[in-house]
Length: 349
Image 1: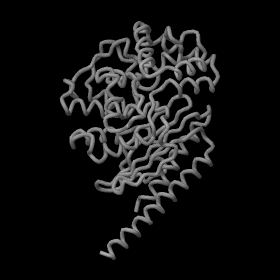
Image 2: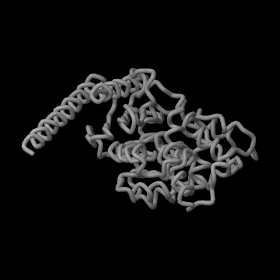
Image 3: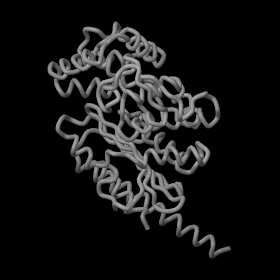
Image 4: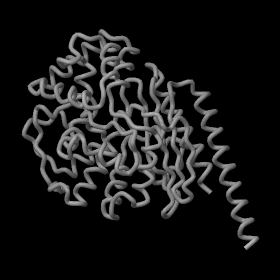
């Protein structure tokens, strides 16, 4: 018994030393980068060790919010809360189309695609139109309700890509004629119900807006506004959650605590086919299996995922970087890659 207690004491000291050492390394990496504001959550799934920096503050998610959307879709199908199936066909409407990443926006109105194909595009190509089609079908309030049910109280995920973009462009009665910083300030003062209502109005008022005109509005805005103005409004008008809560979601997903084995494997499988690999995977061994999702908008460079260390052994890596100045996106990507490498080295053996 005495030997066992001594072993546990030694192990506890070793774990504490590893956590402290890695946290110090991460602080040093962030300080050297001099890029924006950074939130980090590292979780070693076998031991439950957590290394976190500024992890309780909600950060702008950009396309990282597409991971909780996929998990909530899977949960609804698994529990038969929704009649949806992966084989269900969804039809592209003009009001679904969103500018930005993805090619679905260029498909003809009336085109049909299976839910499985839309999920694949949402995660591996970060397709905004596919995401919005899925998000509307599962309910724009569903992700926040589910995340809060598992203890993730920071979640503010209710904006479609289209709504966030329209508001940022001042393309609604609530924000028309306002400059980017004014839009950001007004949005920040609204309480959650008022934000939801404003997002719904923005979509309703622009239901007939063509993709061509949508893109023209974005191009005009980009030419008139300064990079700092674009960053301020993009970071403000976006879905948000804390690095800690995203770490909890990925840890529970990987450990099979959110979904049954079939749906857990489905979600991880999709994330394992990610096509944007210049952040978490950049400095890691090529043979590793990594399940992750990037997110990028003006001033925001993110990546969240799980590095598979071995059978039933994963390393959750969440790095959110915001307030990234124009031209510093590459440095933000390097910051994420360096943090991922430090975390992997700390837990690889």
